[in-house]
Image 1: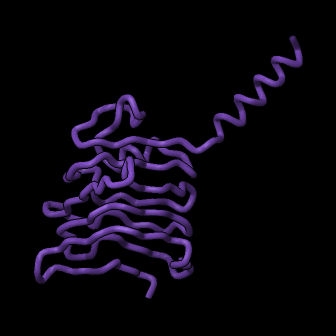
Image 2: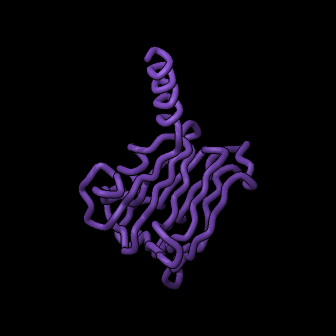
Length: 156
């Protein structure tokens, strides 16, 4: 019985360190689990641990929690759609800031459409030592005429 308990504790320790998925859906109010998704990227990021994925369902994400998100160096995450063929839209029409800013040296943002970016860009990178080869971006950007079409890199 003692060996069984030691093995169980070891399994629980390993299981708790595995990456998890955090789920977001438009209008969600839950705990970011698959059964009860939350409603914005900032809430999912707050619930995430380093190595987790933040998965967005189809839909258009606007408002607080879907702009001005700051990714930190001690919490590296992947932000992506819930499934292949799903293309969530981050609509920054009424936003006062870019979708996200990061100083992290490793992040993945893929499969999103970022539309109507704020005048200071859609994504901000702010570290002089940030190696761009460790940041992966794969998204569509749809901005109206006379709006910025850029990733704001403050390190230059």
